[in-house]
Length: 208
Image (cartoon, rainbow, N blue to C red; front, side, top):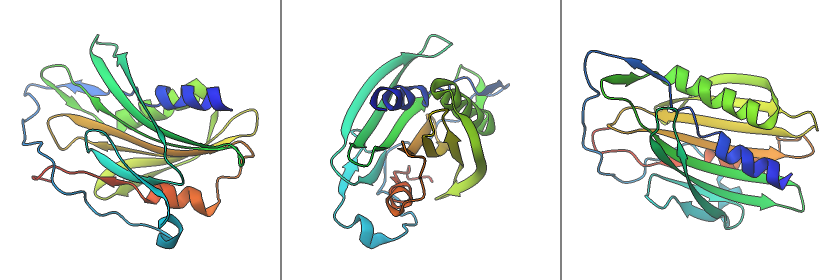
């Protein structure tokens, strides 16, 4: 399970071509970070003793059951741009579960605007291709004012993945956030899974 999951964590962060040509450029805004915005948390007592993780650039915080391993890689977009993907991974080996969070910028060609729904479609399609999985369920979500998708996927081996994808396109550099849990036995309804997904707190710019 380990190597399949690690490959998924990298493949999920590639919806980088979801843009439409426009006659005007994307407006520039102040992207200085303000305090982390609060988000709804289910079963708060469950995460009290968990490990708080802050992404290296302060773009989000989240709580893992134990200290995660941070992985930073650079990948090329179809337009030839280099994008850094920052991923945090915790593997619960006894229970054969994996917890993952990641973020990456979504660069746009000059004069283009970002299509959020196409970006989310691209993230979903990339995830299913990389794991040879199928979508069991998918719904649109709004998390702390950001559009996203909640997706459940199933692999031929019986593992299941529950993933939340979010896009913040309300600033100069659009950001793509992913938080997901995978369970080899196919049970993704355990309390820790939802508590992990709900512990995400995204840093917002002052104008947001």
